[in-house]
Image (cartoon, rainbow, N blue to C red; front, side, top):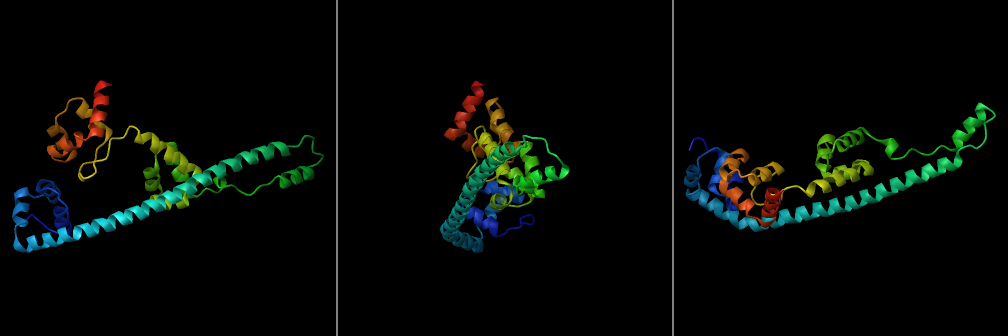
Length: 243
C-alpha cells in the first residue's frame, strides 16, 4: 500500500467510528486499501487499545471544553458589564460638559485656559484604543462577528479577545453573531468533513440531488442524507422551499 501513510490519528478516527470511505477521502487512498490495512494483526491490536482509551479521552476533552466554555462565559459577563459602565460614563461626561459650558464671555485667553483645564477629564477606554482595537472596530463596522475579530487581531482565541479588546466593540460583534445565528444552518456535529452553509440549504431546497451536492462539499451523499434528515435541518428546508 504505497500511497497510504498511516498515523495515530487514522487509528483514533477509525476507533471513534468514522467510515472507511470518509477516511479514504482524507488519506487519498481507496477504502478497500484501508480495509486491508485495518485487518493487519498489529493494527487490530492498536485499534482495540484505541477503542478502550476512547471513553477516557472523550471525557477529558469534554472536561477541557467545559472549563474553556465556563471561562469564556465569565469573561463575557465582564465584557457586558464593562460596556454598560463605558456607556454610562460617556453619558455622564456629556451631561457634565453641558453643565460646565461657560455662560459668559471669557475676559482673556488665560481665563479660557483655566476653564478648559478645570473641565479636563481622564482619557476614556474608547480614547485609549490600541491597534487591535482599531482592527476589531473596522471588522465589526464591516459586519463581522467574533470569529472575524479573532482573525483580524491575531489573538487566536475568544478568551484573549475578551481580555484585550474594547468592550463596546465586542458587544457589537456579539450582536452581529446573534443575528447571524437566526439564519445559520445547524452544525454538522458528528459529520466532521461536512461544513454546512446557507448555500447548501438553498441548493437542496431548489431541488439539487444529494450526489451533486456531495461532490461540491467533499463528502459522501449518504452523509448529506443523514444531515438533511435531522429535524431542525428539515424545518429549514421546508421554510426555504415555501419561500
